[in-house]
Length: 74
Image (cartoon, rainbow, N blue to C red; front, side, top):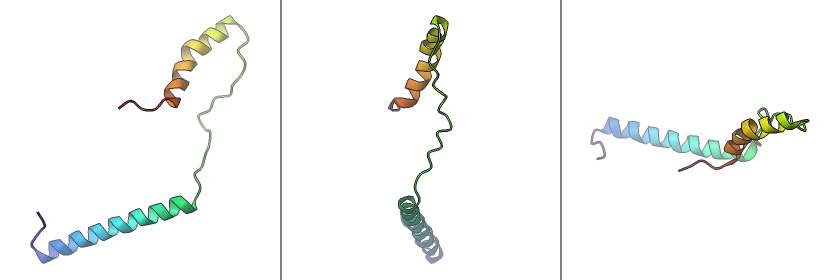
């Protein structure tokens, strides 16, 4: 399974060490830099004024918002 050619071993060692370094730097910067919460997809929540507004809220917006909040299906 492991390559016998010395140059292939060197390339493989370099690739593995680069991957390890990348994962370590990613973990370090994830710990240092906080996540950005833009709230870009949160629609303004206005109170429905009439029956038709409430019907649209229940039929259209409720499935979209519940799909975003529910965990993904496996």
